Amino acid sequence: MTAFGTAVADGLTITRRNLIKIKRVPDLIVFATLSPIMFVLLFRYVFGGAIGGLPPGISYAEFLLPGIFAQTVVFGSTTTGASIAEDLQKGLIDRFRSLPMARSAVLVGRTIADLGLNAISIAVMALTGLVVGWRINSSLGEAVGGFLVLLLFAYAISWLMAVVGLLVRTPEVVNNASFIVIFPLTFVASTFVPLETFPSVLRTFAEWNPMSAVTQAARELFGNIPAGAPVPDAWSLQNPVLYTVIWTALILAVFVPLSVRLYQRTSTR
Amino acid sequence: MVVEGLVKRFGATTALDGVDLTVAEGSVLGLLGPNGAGKTTVVRILTTLLRADAGRVRVAGLDVVDDADAVRASIGLTGQYAAVDEYLTGLENLEMVGRLYRLSRREARVRAGELLERFDLTGAADRPAKTYSGGMRRRLDIAASLIARPRILFLDEPTTGLDPRSRLGMWEFIADLADGGTTILLTTQYLEEADRLADRMVVIDRGRVIARGTADDLKDQVGGQRLELTVRDAVDLGEVARRLRPLGVDEPRLDASTRRLSLPVSGGTDALAEALRVLAGAGVEVLDVGLRRPDLDDVFLALTGHAAEDEDRTGAGDRTPVGAGEGAA
Image 1 (tube, each protein chain N blue to C red):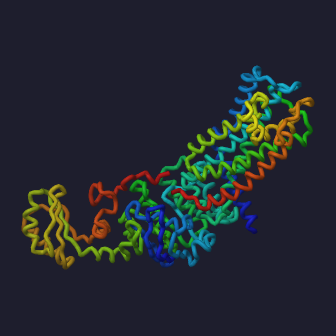
Image 2 (image 1 turned 90 degrees about the vertical axis):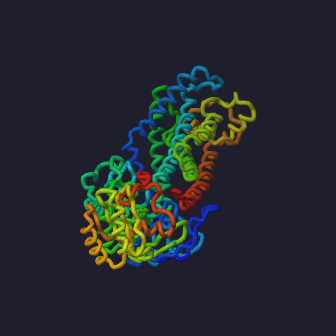
């Protein structure tokens, strides 16, 4: 087998291991599906009536769902960091590192399993969204593209979180630390409210925040931007799909090699 | 396995300060030392998990840095933590590790079945490892490290945190493996364990080798035999000491609380026979009498000036691990 072939085989072995855990610990799957449902319902019915400034011809449900998708999958990716830290703590990474397996396999297997978990929660959110008034107004191809852009971006974030997990090494700390960073990132963006109401500095930040771009890309691909909506000022939001893909590629290019390198050097103590 | 001049620093602390050791193929080396002596660091370097700052290490004839992957393919490692995935069943754990050692799906399954049988885990094969007791996890962990029939096995404190019965069982497994020709490097804090399992020993303390050889070599370094006896009534100790003193090569040691007398002697069984004759005429009730060679506890005390285990050990016969449970993941 080629080096690439063995890396893929090892990655799949680890993916299977992680998927078995998802199957055995029902809490994981319940959490991955219930919390997005909760978010959709909370935002749709608590904020839905109060948020103004939406482009004419669009309901809050249609504006909101792409934002919820983006926020949820990015939060879903933090699982990667916490799980890697947990494996480190339990000595499993030591075992894996003493085996003649591909150096990338533990990370590949982890990120792919978390991608699967994200795919499940996005499916649940989409169904809930359809119930509360969200609609896909584009072609099947574009809609699939919308889900792909979201999942790929989240996949890249998983690799970033893998680095965090390898550096921080305590699952609880990974969770808290990522919450503090990711929560504002997902809020200072066009995820839940239109950018027009932001103060100017915050607005510029939000315009270039990749979270806004992912959300905008999803809105575009699901057809959740009404025909008469004003064209955004920032290039990032005029070309949200391209801008998101650039970010995704950039994060992968930096954090895949970095995390594999860190993994090779890391150890329980 | 050859280790020369191994040095490892963590920041300002020098964990290993020039360790040399060799392990002949098919033999068992006991690496002994107190907590923090550097035993685990040696194992981590030899198993490619950690890089040394200086020194040369060849495992199975291969360099651990340049040929790391080939080294990994010929070793098995059981660390201090039972590194098993607690959500997978025993069988799934072994199959996974087997696949990662590049066994075919079939081979991995067959081999997993054999090992579960051998380690008495067949009944628990389909239960998640989460439900296993500490001893079962350790057994599963060792089974995992054996799945690809490694030529060399590293066991880092394999019985720390196990109850006495599980420990005995583990000793039998390890002895079986050694009989089967596996080269084993075993670290332990328990001298009894090394005495029982290892062909040769290396004692390290604060990152340096302070003694090496067979158990007998080490005992000879400390000195000869001792006559030890226990009387029923502590008041008799003085009388016994007075009568036996001429047989000894040094002053007898008395311990009223354990009602025990210890006397360094030369002449082996002759001295014992003579002592029994003297005691028969003394009219003292003796509960236990015997000739004892120094054990490794004595060796360690003599070499380092402190006991191998923590100071608060309760007695010579009590080898309950201090801090039991620290190794149970």
